[in-house]
Length: 181
Image (cartoon, rainbow, N blue to C red; front, top):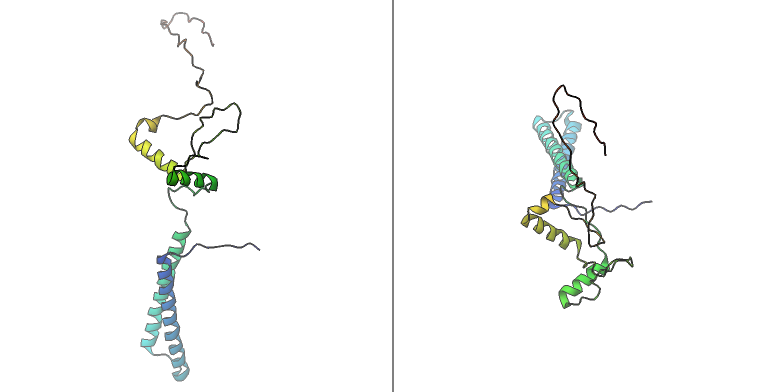
């Protein structure tokens, strides 16, 4: 059997639940009084019927509010990234650096023997995202440029330096042969 855990209810959900339960208890009391009167007189008082109907409306509106609050709570958050599990070693190393200045364990070494030792430092993801947001806000070039991480000191991309050949040809003249390369 699978165990499921629910997150604690929001204050708005608790208030909606209490409102619905109070309205339902009032409905039960008024309906019991109406049923008792029907048994005694074979018909219920008009005021009692109206009271039960109004309380029934209150229960229905409280139930609708509770349903709305519960459905809002079940929605995934908008624009938020899912919370990633942070490695405990990285968090401990970063906290140690901030509190005591201990840099042991902060240097990130690549697993490859061909990689250089200057791979960078471990920073918690939240801090990294905050830094990236500030960099994006401060530098408009970061909005249009991309960053490519490479192992070598040079980035090579094949580019044609020959350019495009062109020429003028009359409308009715013979066309020269083109070179597809």
